[in-house]
Length: 179
Length: 179
DNA sequence: ACACTTTCATAGTGGTCAATACAGAATAGC
DNA sequence: GCTATTCTGTATTGACCACTATGAAAGTGT
Image (cartoon, rainbow over the protein chains, first blue to last red):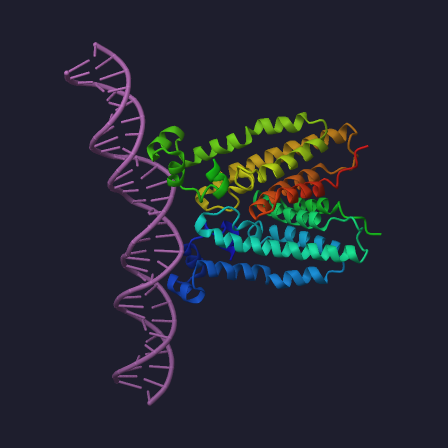
């Protein structure tokens, strides 16, 4: 997983993977099918399942908490001491060859699904009066995920954890103050 | 340039380039040296030079204008009708193999340079009293560039222009109201 | 102890990569 | 008209890609 995380999907070769995992290519293929399936497995382990992420969003105290939790988790995950910089989901396939386009689209679908869950969580708070009626769920969910994506690249560019946590604070400035 | 823009640096092959440009490999190599130099040339044409971008930031009326202009230009550029979705600078090398790591670092340096220029522009406005004394330049410049990066990925994921322009508005909510 | 199944690594498969050697065409100089 | 020189396209280079066929080694049941 670390290799995909560090170098992305296409730049990670089967030979790299077998060398690191200490197994031979046929073992890898009988265990995982093909490179694509192995990558899917890595993404699943990374996220702990899309459903789990969506559930965490739904069960947050408020939409604001959900947004801040997502951003903070991303900032911390992007700058873990024992893990590669950046986010596997955000950075492992951004631009791809046509042969990997469908893998890219799978990741994009996951990103959209999580963003949609946050948007619905925001709309729920708007309906409940927790957030103002003119609070734009589409805008704020989009902003949160743009920032998640952007922080991943910044981490790869060398940004430190404090920098990313500042960005999280900056991204939350548009939310109404608690009171 | 369009090929690099659409598929990224590593996923674009010399064969793709020569086919599209209508020239043969030796012509390309005598004209540009190698793939790396050709890519550098493409980035230069895309940005119109880093110095020009920095100058635009410096010459903006206010730091706020500079930030909004950057974000808006990115949102429009990411969703041009006649150009590939996303941003060449932001998306053409995010994760790379070790052999392309130095090209990636070159792009990262450009991104950092532009962000640093915006940060300094903000600090100038803080010193001049245009922005409050506690306005965090590092935070807001970081936020702007995280959003620029994130919008590029969202555009590649299929986001439309209106969505990105909304995100721009969201990213600007943290700035003090004009008056 | 022996036949049989399963496991796994070596050694390749065809294909594509960035980059170039070389041969033929076109142009210039006289 | 003829040689010399500069281009340009084809074909090739060695390296690496995802993936697999084959054969050796290790168990396992009797």
